[in-house]
Length: 305
Length: 309
Image (cartoon, rainbow over the protein chains, first blue to last red):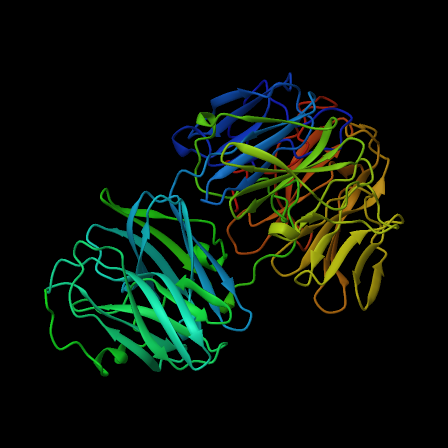
């Protein structure tokens, strides 16, 4: 080994201390360069030194507000960046942690029982986003669209996640200017076992009979059609709109999925799922889930306007 | 993309796309993914490499947050939460404080145990709401902490007599490795452990607060019956300075090498790279003699050492 570069005026240790983790390297130099961060000799500042072609180069220094006492510690922030922290002689922690400004996708896996994957959109600007999945990063299938309006976080369970056959699945979210799909945004119900009435609120990008939500329906979680409420006209100005349907013969604890259909683009928006006993919550379905139901009766015969 | 997917770094997110069509990618590791259960340490990575994980970040444009503590701090560990970072500090008197930082705000969190033996570095284990510090058993050396092995079912730690103890619900196995009382226990991806062994006082530099340093390092395989698989000693007039080695693939041969700070009286400290078999493959010039400019701890990416993340 030969010495490639030296930088003076820094230290990574205090005589007498058993703390030997006073330094840290990472991609937080200028222009995203890889640097090593450690205290100056006075132990009052952190100094970032990078290794360029022929020499060690100073990048930046920051004050600690006291003398360093702890090791440096770093963590990955939820959006993937780096946070840095250190404890000082003034009995404080000084933390550099970037705020979560970048929009990001987050996913958690639930391996218990029903193989549900939660996919979340966080920090995205208001608008419509299409969630897509792929097993090879080349072909992407739309799973559904979700709206961010006035909220910073959305978490949606992806129902039937075990229908993904590939061991690796990628997700991405893409902002869409003109939403295609109809979302279920609320579900209410009344009635008794075996005879329930549902009031379903739908938000859809209707423009007239050429593009409108033409039904909402209820299916079992195995994909069997239980009930369909056909809509007779478009809702261009009344958005979102609520239409009731029934009677539906259900057991109180029977799991069902409620979704809407567009005359051109078909299924693909936010669904509600649950049971009368437990209530209904929003979620998404994998692309193509229960697609064959679109050809089953009853089907709309005409569009009034 | 494939690389980070294999490593199960869910947190990394890549951005591409046109200005009006922001696209965010995320990978899901399916059932093949086993997230490391081994815990968070003050030296960042269980192989001893002090390298931060995460995407490039412009830290100097971030306004620092100052968080008052109940006393002077000694150690700091941190872990990602769903919507922030949990910072856990151990004060000089051993008291543990946890603080959650999220979007420029902080809040005090509960953490167990509330106190560690003074001086003992923390191991942060669990995730989310279950994050806690490793609670040392009564016979543990208070100069270091254990590591979780076997996907968290067992713990390996150094006891007061220098044994390596591998303990699980089915019992404990004690290997008489003559560990340095404050050696950090490093771990590779195959559940092997690397530690400093054979304490000696023959090098009277004492820069680390005592005069006891290691004369060897030992590798223990914990898969199956725990057993010593390698032991390498330095020269008769040399010691390995510090509390930790660095266990990374320095030369790109897909095998981990061991980087040690080796000191000898009258010469100061130098970096030396060993194969696990004990063969020296390179060493650097001696730097300093009894000066604070000596090398205390090997790590880093330069042309001397290769960055291995």
